[in-house]
Length: 68
Image (cartoon, rainbow, N blue to C red):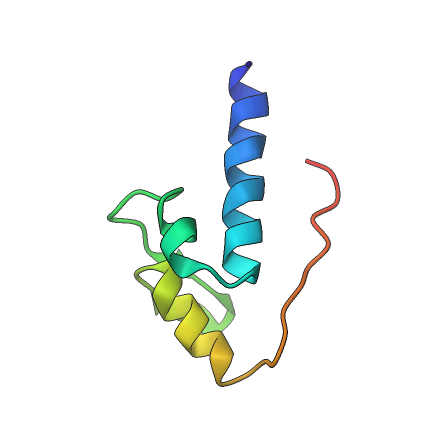
């Protein structure tokens, strides 16, 4: 499998796990020292923090991934 194909697979799997939400699985696709920065400069240290933040804002999140 080529590097670009593998990178697309990793990103797709991460996004699908994040939307499930399955923060434990999403974390397996990330480095342990990653900081996720959202609009407004909100920084989150892991997918669980994203899930917790979104739980208070959204009942359901699903994005169309389109093409990479």
